[in-house]
Picture 1 (cartoon, rainbow, N blue to C red):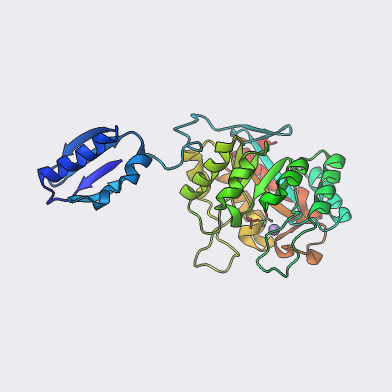
Picture 2 (cartoon, protein in one colour):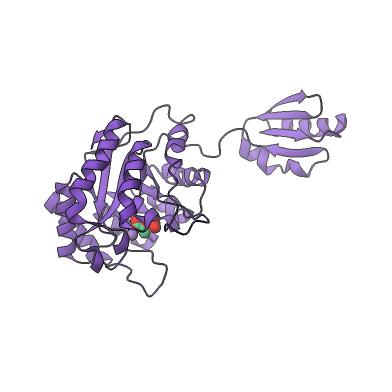
Length: 339
Ligand code: PEP
Ligand code: MN
């Protein structure tokens, strides 16, 4: 932490701050400048924050120097990108590109199995499908719950594809854990810290989506909650709220290279929820691969026109293989091969 004094601060005020800091056991360095004096406090930043030094006479501001996220940080806990093994599929590490595809929501066994086979044939490495859905309206279809988990297990058994499904509520933790290879935490729950703590202790990797209005710092601090419990984390950029309403959300492609600089965690992109329109899904997917994403999670349906949820943004299953090939070409330019 750096404590910056006001230009008018007296020597006594500087000394009072120095003494206050020293009493907590941190190492203190006083740096007199031409206009203001800065005081460096090396050690426990949380303890220094809690001192409330802004309230002391002569203090202008308290500036954090170290990053607020710890376990997710590339510098602090890992020097190299993490490589995850999800039921035999590699995620992250810069050499592979993973395609997670499937329906927004499991609607029936026929629908899910048909999509699962189509995406498998097209090169997908995992199957997505919602069992418990967060819906904006309480009157909208909110998923088949346990029955959907059963269907996903069937799809996994038939295709060998590991399953990604959302953990919406801690009360479903055991049953979702039992059926899922990867637990998705949806955008709306990114700041549900109690749920993140539960998810972190279930012994499954967690696909953590960025909140609709969350900064990347907040995303990484949320990931610390999961990492603290011992689980691996895959980060997912899925579009954020901006003033632009032409697309459902604004896909923040800059987040991908920024996250690559600051965290060791794999980063994937969800072009479906960002776009809200299937015509934009392929260009956004190609762009995501080009900026260095470790993979894509994309919605696919046999007949999106009849989908119960997110049909407008779902790719036709019959188009998936060609789509996957074109997206993979961009990942290959970035030095990755399909996982
Ligand atoms: C989803 O993946 O179906 C979903 C609801 O995503 P998000 O939480 O990003 O809106
Ligand atoms: Mn969806």
